[in-house]
Image 1 (cartoon, rainbow, N blue to C red):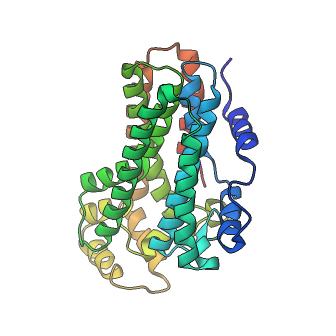
Image 2 (cartoon, helix red, strand yellow):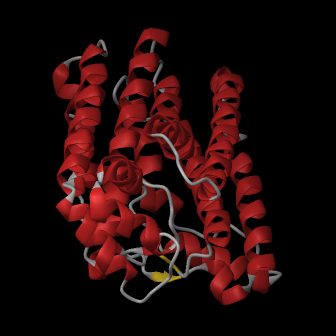
Length: 322
């Protein structure tokens, strides 16, 4: 019988819920312990476990791998928050906001090092390929973050350029988490490829939902500053499409608002989004990528009942409100 999302979350937390860093210097390590204990959804490590279990019983190596992925993900969050000047993460003040940028930079670096400590626990049979995919993915995530920052300096970004950036910044880690887990489970190259594509398309749908929630989400549930993307003129699915489709006074107003930081900027931009049907368009685009993800899931050569937990996870990610 396949594990449920809830049982995998509990299983991973049981494995992961211990101190990962030394006690000294406390000014460096205690903020990291606090940050990773404020767990978020643990989606990427759960995908590692699901990728393994899709093909075989969960091996202990899948937990080492999941821990490495989770620490790498948290490293990117700590550094991204510095670059984005974000005040909140998971509903709490960011590491750099409380402890300073220098400590946050060092802390992210240490998390990356400890991630490799976990990878080194994996049996040699799979280690070379795991390291190759992990390193390739890590570089791609950094490339995606750079493109994201580059886009902030451009007046116009095409939708396909933004999707490429999102694949690097967000999707490849979801996809690789699944593929890495499937390697531990003994999956064929054919099945690994389709599982990766399932994760890649799901990641794009996930980001569409994230962009949507940043604009239209409930701040008490979302855990981040709602409207933060609008305030910072961040290129998102919503803004890119609005600039392509808004007309007349709405387009003129939107372009004018991008040059201001007025207190009612978010409210006015959201009004333009709604008049232009941006919220409905985003939901349709999200569903299109979700269907692509399901197509690749269907192509994986295992019994359909073994795929149900991945379908359930996909639905959980896409209908979320936080």
